[in-house]
Length: 288
Ligand code: AMP
Image (tube, rainbow, N blue to C red; front, side, top):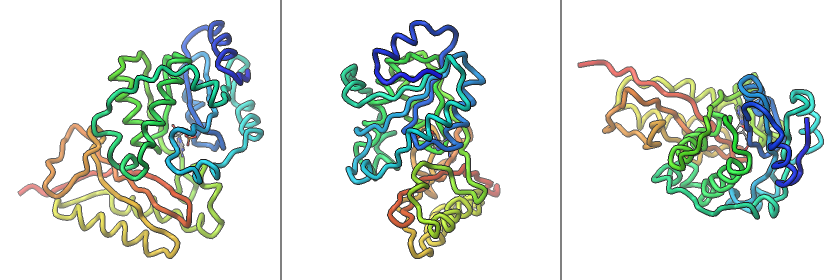
């Protein structure tokens, strides 16, 4: 693999690359979830570019940015094991990267105002800024994102559509620990005690992800929150079941769109670490 620490070096390398370019943006502290995206890119393209950049503009809480896990040495070792000689690892500095910004940000309607957008104001404007900038610099044919950050994936697809970028955005499945806990860089911040209890999030979502009566949507949401919050150190910030196209939350009055998929999306404070997850929900209402 080749390391590019500046935009200028990256652009020079990309000029020489041949074939399709696949791009995997990350914030480092890499785990198997990230590696699965990289493997997918390697199987579909000729050159894979992996960026490691903790993007300051997407952190609405400076404390969260400060404590975000960083482990560049171990990241580079992991990447060296799976990348080929022509693949590129891009580790820019914020000043360098943002000096190339063309600050036109698309309007994303309601997509960035709900769920995470509601609870982390400004988060998605930072995500969209950095992904758009990276897309403009790298100009990949394909980009790979995790379903783990479901709303981010929906928003990036919409950004690409609205800006008419010629990039195929692929969503990749969430990799989980054997306990069911979704892999996340933030898991490194969990104490052993809290980590061992955090599997309750996925288990609870899976236990409730078939809804048999529209009248039970509210009851189901309450049951999920109650179960998770029964653990002393855990507090659910939100749980909503949303349509994967509009991100609109469903209620008992909603008409289920058979062409859409529905995801139960959750954010939970596990101690002082904020975890997000999502699971597909289905409806099997009795006709009558
Ligand atoms: P991050 O470094 O957290 O910004 O994540 C970089 C990319 O990896 C994003 O597209 C995430 O959705 C994806 N990702 C994070 N965790 C997982 C996981 N457990 N399984 C699959 N992809 C993931």
